[in-house]
Amino acid sequence: MGLDVFIKPGLHKCPSAKDVAAFAALGDLPLAGWMAEGSLIAFRGKVYEDFVFRVCMNSLYQEWIPPREAAQMAQAIEALDYESELVKELLEATRVPESHARALGQVLSLCAKRGLGLHGDW
Image 1: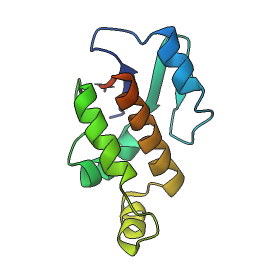
Image 2 (image 1 turned 60 degrees about the vertical axis):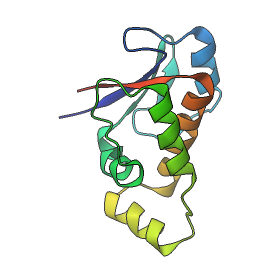
Image 3 (image 1 turned 90 degrees about the vertical axis):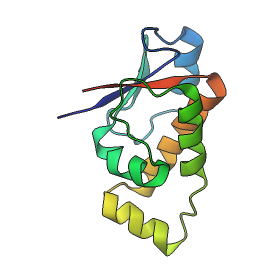
Image 4 (image 1 turned 45 degrees about the vertical axis):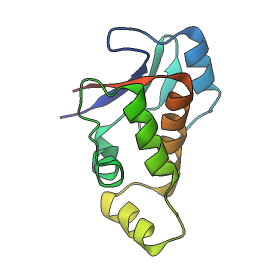
């Protein structure tokens, strides 16, 4: 089963045009299914689930992850030491390229700055 993760201010709310523009300014991120256009900010979450669970002790398979939890997830991912053997092994075990992990941290960090959460849809 697939998982789309939408970035929103609330479960039943759409991001503002300013929110979409802020994420679009991140450019063409290597995240699977990345999009920030129109009224959508989203990525494919299934490929990152194991990585997120191991690093953040949280699952993307939730209907709603509030902004505070998204901020904690960002902190956990951004605190990784990508030069350490442990993190290299983690990336290999979860099949997440370093560039994707860094991009996910960047996206979650922007969620934190803008007070946005994550809506999982599967």
